[in-house]
Length: 166
Image 1 (cartoon, helix red, strand yellow):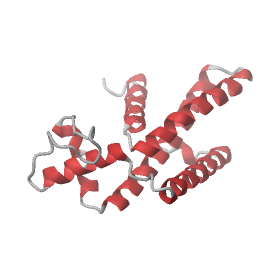
Image 2 (tube, helix red, strand yellow):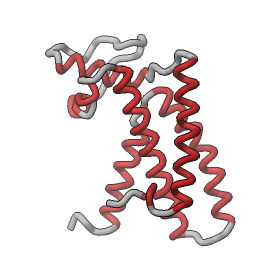
Image 3 (tube, helix red, strand yellow):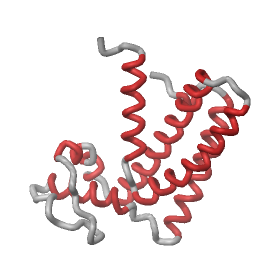
């Protein structure tokens, strides 16, 4: 699997712009003390509690609504991060989400161009990009995993489309 990020100059320019914007957002979150990423903190804390032999269910991690409500299998994805200090783990996760967003958006752009060759498609996708940027900001602020799950679904969709499961 080749990364779309590296395929051509325009992808690299797009990547640089998104990385720069996300870096500015990261710095603003940090300076204003809003870099906790509360959802990630719940996943991280539950995985850490589980690795220490504790019970990750039934206790609030951070916020009053910060209960881990997912299966133990979901917790396994966060076990590697639980070995790191939270600030490092949250930084790694932040940039993972940024890379996934860039890769997914470039793949969706390429897919859309293959389906619709209309020049107005660029404007439609630009409007969609503006709308999606609000979701990206929420993903990065809260530490959600929705973009990662969407990317995994996209990879499965493309594998099925390529008939790699038969």
